[in-house]
Length: 507
Image (tube, rainbow, N blue to C red):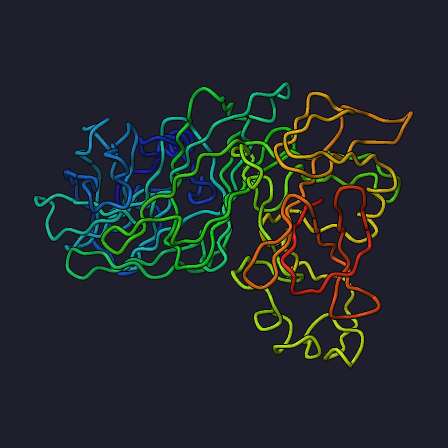
């Protein structure tokens, strides 16, 4: 052990300061023990001997090859920063607000010296560093903790840090609304389909070059808490989040708002990041932190049901043209879009309608499993938006039609019942209630988005087809859908499962 004993009070004060200045602060939770201890925070595997005083210079990583050098921004040292050198803590003495700092402290062991930042997230096992990326972080304006590592063979040679993670850049705007909580950001939840986003990164060194193992002992989800950060429509708030490398798959970014609603953006890793020296760089998203839903006043047991105001795949910020309202098209039981909709490309068969491999109640259609409602893993709404979202059941679609008013609107036509609403696309405006109980303040629009069969989109503007999560009870090759056009609405139509229809999520 080395150095002098620190008090509980000083220890807590220092840990609160142990952050790095950038564009966002992330407080690393549950990574430092708040107990009285010496400056070598715990016994270190592979190091022993008497401590000696050390003063050493340290330079943060910068330049085009940096995983965190986004649009010329640099990582600067902050007052109170602490690094872990062979398991002992060195505190910043000079260089606050710059990329070049001077640290002082007491160190045990001989060269080479292995160094991690922040100290509270670093564990030493001889020549191996373990950096902990927590599952939960807390936002603090103006700063971010960027995990970094370095190695040096001599104190005189100084330290050249390398960034251990990537940076996720988000460009956020709020939405002008009477509900101010709709633009207050409570938290951001990141979810990867393939890679752990939190856990421990083992770092070894090939000379002075760090080599990062895949993150272990973690999970594919990370949460950053914002506590009600107010976003506006006039100004863009830029947020940077430390993020482990993502190896393919999809990344979902969920924005939880203070009003209890949320929105999500889903991108592939290829779309999300630019390759920089074989590392991942930054994702930029411009979002409005609100998710528009509506309760259409259905009776029990559907009285708590919330309907999304938009189809799955619609960008609420871009609704200028009719096609912008349509969204994506899905075969029943599939969670991804595709270019060709037919039995030859359908996920749950072996190439034909009578070779079904899932959701079958009659052997003449395939392997019987008697499943009649989609598993959530096969529900397009749940797979793409997560949370409590799902596709409506056939009964829920039927109740929506029976207890509400459906008004057909041609493209560009104003509504009779809701004069303030002008339809960009053709479709039905659904208004809460009927006749004397009509509530014109509560409504949603369901566009006639057409359908996809084979490689073609047909009947957009005159026909709408929307999936339910319910299998056709009479023919397993089909599932119940809502089909409509000008003058008709069929709430329990049987559509072939391979058709590409629209999805309107509920929760």
